Length: 99
Image (cartoon, rainbow, N blue to C red; front, side):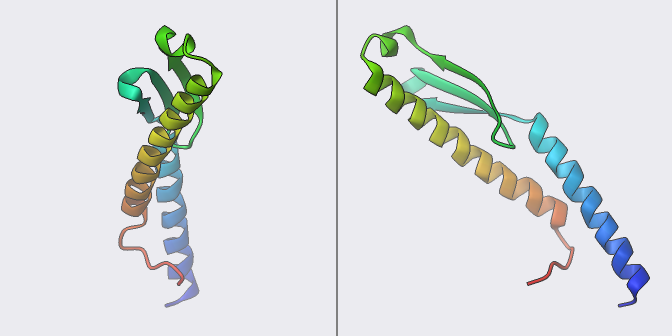
């Protein structure tokens, strides 16, 4: 492969990855714990946008609140990880990547 073709391919890959990252930044994911007792909204780039905790959870003590927030975060992160794999996989599909 000649250098010009390689550079064009690298530019195309960079553009597709940049577009995918923009898409992830604009996508909101909900992490839910205890049937909605705690909900975390996060972007596909792991930026937390909002945390909602049901008043019933707040009255059960700090340990319960912490566990609910952690559980909602883990749910949101797992969903974000899946989305990132999908979006970035689509962006790099068919592009030869170094091993």
